[in-house]
Image (tube, rainbow, N blue to C red):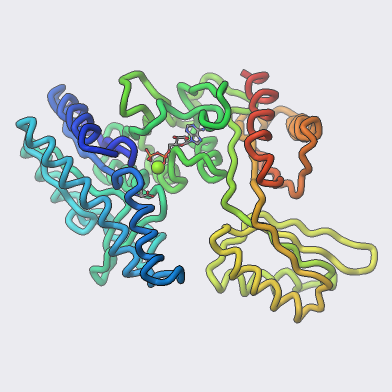
Length: 407
Ligand code: ADP
Ligand code: ASP
Ligand code: MG
């Protein structure tokens, strides 16, 4: 008998028939003799609708985060009750749990809360009595009893965290694709399903834009050694296993191409090239809770320097205001921003011991006549910032030239 955590995303629970389909899969797993915890997302489109309602009532201003979480968490509450009912209809005992009911304690950073602890006693006692435990993804509760949420895509993290806390044998992530591909299959038609991928590569792909798993879920799995199996809700084929590096037999030079079009770029031009300038600029951004991603500094021969950096697009306007204020104090000749950029990245463990991958990447982009605005590299990834309009074309061309070639 195994203990299995299964997570079903929004499309997988998008309507009554799909919820019944999930119930059938869960029941089949229990009938094989396993204990099952099911973690579900809100029905497809529900979180977006709730978000739109909040913005409408606030006349497009940002809603107060505590009330926003109280609202958006209701999507998952609907699904857990409906799925528990569907399982009960099939003659199996099931019980729904909100984040608070399962003891998912988080900090109080509304809309992006971090999990602090999970009290598994209650889940265990129901599992031992033969219940399927149906838990709400995406939500938790803080020390004051306020409902919190874990950020978009957070149900992946709920599922992996519960699997870690329960010491589950596997965390199965059921979604609308049948595994992790070498690129988003909706963008690159010739993308290939990987049978295995390392935690390290998956972490890079997720944090660089592949939304198939939330980044934090991969971090949890890595830290606690939870095996993840990403697979389809609609077909029963094996999907992709996320495993330690040493278990990946097929070590590709480039195993994935991904894109993130949720950032914006700001350039503060011609500031004095002196110690302390970067701190003057980035400290107020940090204090405003804005996470700066890439930073490039260029020197000019006249003793000045240009600072260019990227921020989440949702923070663009606030970041630009801060940059304009600090730029003014530093006598910057110009502060400009661009919120129509995309960051396209290639990821692969094999890059550690293969030189020349960056050159190939730049060659491909040059051939496509795509201008590179910024570059950043690490041991197993190379990212470039380009005009958003060319993002899909860049992903396709890089996939064709670098992933297919290295396979
Ligand atoms: P869910 O609602 O099940 O959580 P998501 O929409 O969050 O599903 O994630 C699945 C989507 O991730 C897929 O439909 C696919 O378009 C996208 N995706 C992006 N990159 C990849 C990739 N490398 N492999 C598989 N899917 C990817
Ligand atoms: N419902 C939330 C979202 O749409 C969480 C999730 O689906 O993982 O982001
Ligand atoms: Mg998701």
